[in-house]
Length: 249
Length: 217
Image (tube, rainbow over all chains, first blue to last red; front, side):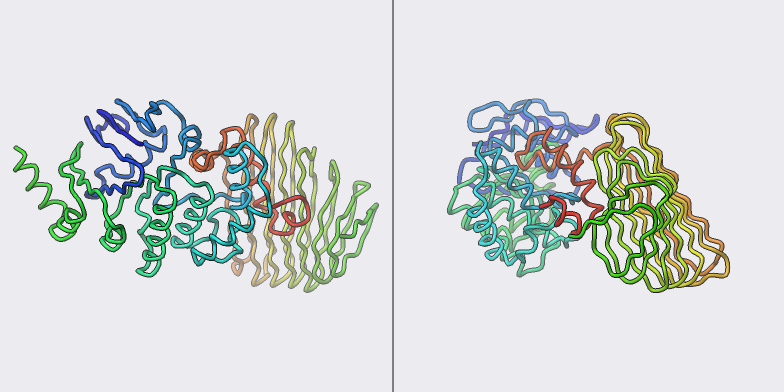
């Protein structure tokens, strides 16, 4: 599904990652962990197509080279980014944006009855008040509400590759459980590939299985499964990074 | 909604209506709680007199209003005005508002959104709070987008009294790149995303009133 091949990522003149290789298949959940500032969110944004970064190497999606495609072209192919602090868009409501996006995706006008029914059902499942449907996107919303609104968009747009950039930040324990349950339901139903950036073991443990990658300076230092996440969260990034780099040498 | 033709003077008292200004030199005397939507290609010499305990929400939204010149808002005591203008211009454009707060316990919120597609949009907002007045609030929220043209804004608040709460927020810039990327990341083409953001910028100033009554979502 998504492959980073000899991927180099730069911001301004600084190298964030060098020769990074990563393959994520449909139905798989991959977790990126690493200390603050290592470049986790930069990877997320660059996969989505942000022009704030320079990329060398190749990003392939379903076999197609998408390295030079813009954000819209990537979204059209099913890539979806749920960022740490989703934007507020004044004057554009959730319903209005989704209606335009869906009619573009399906190349057909949206059936308003079906559309409204689906939106309301998703709001119910996310415990999100239905009034948000006709409110401006994320305007005046708390961090938790914004995350739920982005999940509402995800369920409506049905992407096949989802990047979650610290979706759990700012959420209380109950909200993390609700978000995780919604994502697991989506995973079972649509089998997307999911790339998660998180520091939360509660969130990681909500998935049956996942691949965990520890990021260090310019590279993936170690890959494993849930037990690696547990080790990272117990010992800390510094101790583990030093251990793995020394043993590698 | 009622639509009223106004040629010289009108008294508003608990009205919710569209005012079609057929002439220049119009005077509006405001009593009670009112919401009005003003229609005219060019507005000149409009005087709004806010009476004791009156409230007025004014909405002016159009894609090509030529000029809004010499709007004078007079507030005596205990009045509240929301003056909201949103427009997108393809040519030179002038907007000038003079708000005179002469008494006590008044609130004034002047909210302007302008997109200049060509030419110069010159926006001057003057709020004068008289001396020896107390408990007044004056807020100017003025935003412009240079979308091919240029927006010039002069936000002036002169407070001659110490007991006033005064704020002004003025921003002028291009279309926000992060907002554009956000909409594109939902699978909306760049040109449609830009259009939605510009429309949204104008609509954001119109509250639910305009959205419900003038073709919003």
